[in-house]
Image 1 (cartoon, rainbow, N blue to C red):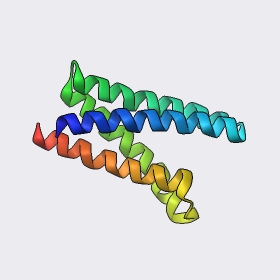
Image 2 (cartoon, rainbow, N blue to C red):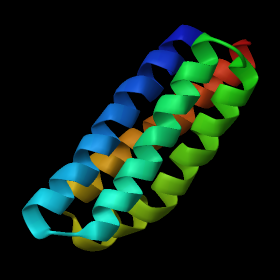
Image 3 (cartoon, one colour):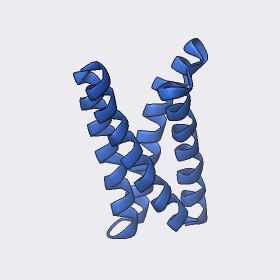
Length: 107
């Protein structure tokens, strides 16, 4: 389960980073670029930590970052009902919470 969490966080981080870049390219949104870049980097770092030095630290970082993204995108999706980016990010963040919690309990 820990390896699944690591893989999920790496993919989630790459998608988040890509979404931030896409937000900048499409709408010239610097906040999207910065938020996507920082969030994506933290998720990638969490995946890296799980695979190398600190399994628990990586899972906790992934959990905190997933929860932060969920707190932003779940209400936004509830309000706008737009699939991209709010729905996709809400789904991925809730999934991130789930896999990191499972990884913590399986560890």
